[in-house]
Image (cartoon, rainbow, N blue to C red):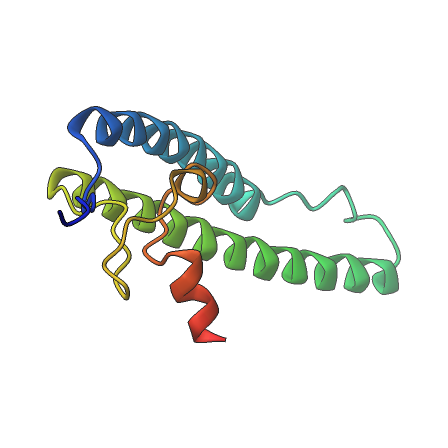
Length: 127
């Protein structure tokens, strides 16, 4: 008798993953708002009456900080997009299926990286 291989997670399991992912989306959106508010903040730290040299350093630091915040925001937006795509896979009942091997991704991996589309086996094959 052929072994019955499970090729997708049950509706109950998918719902548990949906809850986990939605919580991560909510947290990620809140973090993105913090990053954006830091980016938009025009804190000149009261350097108007300070020496021109210090003011130049301060402005340079501000530019670097804005660039770093911009990169953080881009990464956070990608993370949110990946999580939303995971929700779509849940709705399609394809969530948790490795896109390379077609096998189920370990549930522990999905709890840690809920937007994963590769099993550890497939990830190791990429190296």
